Image 1: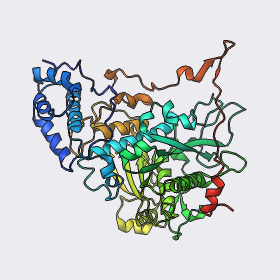
Image 2: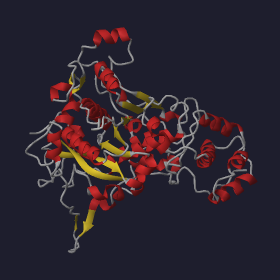
Image 3: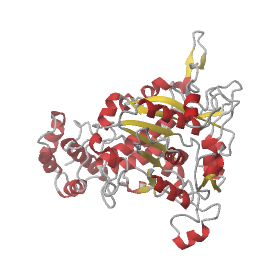
Length: 519
């Protein structure tokens, strides 16, 4: 007899509000829960963990206690049932919160013991910062028929509200822009309209800071930088100039001239166009001045700096994180060092082995989430990279295409998810929403794929065709209502006018002078 779940509200396709903060279990408890769930009948598990859970689950329990699941149940139904079990267990064991464990989650111990088995609190935080990176795609106007193509679709003060993410608890303090005058054309989008908001600039992300309530839950004031990746297909890989150059050659300080990074990434980070009001300051100057301002504002509090990005945005996240610690910007006047961490998703290699070593010396913490089937993390440096014998790398380290990944890698595999179909489309393996789906179901190497938070798998098809067809979720379903067209008072369909776009705050030059970057 099949188990009826008609009264439940925790099926995988139902977006559930995740309890925040999520509990940090003992390092071996997730393994115990997983083994317990696979060996014990579902109704028994629910009875054992239910003693202190809320009445909101009573309908689930009543229904499940009446029936015993057959061993030949459909795999997806098993996933749904184990998802219920996992969620109840997480609700039941709310023992340690983010505020008590944020330094470990932030990489203080290089995530030792938190990845296999997967720590539930770390998983939750990785999804949260991944969603902040995803907003850079959801908010970006990449329609060439829009006169605002290349900009953010929302005003800064309403950014998270317009994306339905008011619960995130961050305030967007400034937008980031980059000039299109570099050799990465597929990173930039331009309008076909002659009268556009800017001919030389693109919106590339934002800086946000946790509000008072969220800071209390997190145990510190969190300054977050989110970088946009590419919104086209994977043609941008071909745009990589694919040669390394000293990071100091673009005036990013470094005492070692052998520390090198990919030239296209470095140019995107440091170039500016003084004829453009949005790009008269480089992305580097925009970030450093804003972080300096926020650090001065919250100097009497516990602070963290967390940088996130997907794809090329992941590379820029690592580059900007390096810059912050290399310049010593994260060291406060009282000599406290503010922890800096990068959560990168599907990011490419950034620099050579010297860059990796320098980054480790400076104490920058980097956790890279990758899909083993994705081609982007395998480039550049297809032939000379961290996976070849060290002796060979020693010989090749002077070559302009010898790269090395940095930090700690969390490798996921989309073939383990019962929700995703097998496809040869490389963009699916690279999709950020797919990475967040895989994070939600990952419990450790060799563990069964079980959704932990009820995060809706339908989000995978928001900008992809990756879910199995029998879930009846249309591919590429996310789009603006009427593609942004509205009817004016004359009854004509026109593009909605937007308020004046933010450029740069008036006190930016003051903070750049304090950093020695302006006169």
